[in-house]
Length: 260
Image 1 (cartoon, rainbow, N blue to C red):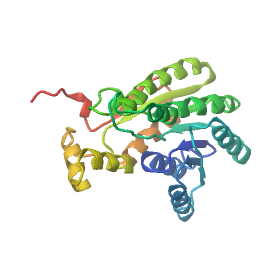
Image 2: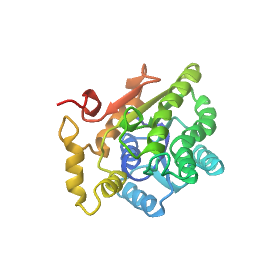
Image 3: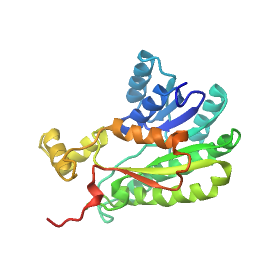
Image 4: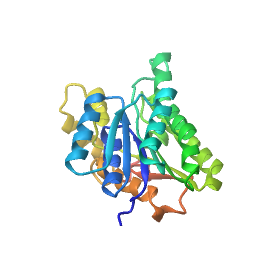
């Protein structure tokens, strides 16, 4: 029996880390509804799942919109009969200081990166309680612990995820719902490629990736699949005593201090 057989998951984000987690859960026997706002990415993920015989449906959803999130939860339960796992991986990464960031961008970042986690909990937890609980995973970032310059909105949203994770874990422990967060370092994703283009304009992306990787003690950036393996563990029964925690997958980045 596969580790996630007879389990049903909603995973937000159909590129990068969210995509890898959706595929990892589905490969373990989980029925996955993966939702994202980018139609081409959704279609590619759907085709890849079909080609590999995975029970994975990719649907279009703006995870900052309550009605759309409610609809995804309802469709998931109507199709599969239950909801056991929620993985919140959808995010946007605006750049700028508080002065440079306009209010609309700030609000959009909070709505997507943080508000979507609230919405999935608000609509999803009542369904999870019907079948003796489950697991919620929230993708934060090392930027929620210590950030670089010029990412005020993104870093704030990621730091707030830790507090919401703890609140959900405490509020729903009696419902047998475990809630944890994961804080990746630099991971080879489309989002990191956009960061590379921002911080190293005109330079080859791979060269910037090497520079990012050199900041990590392991000497490289990570892969979405490495994050997905940690997510799979935390979502599984093997992590049955883990809740309210944040788990680093950062190549040792936060283990040191900036003194040579």
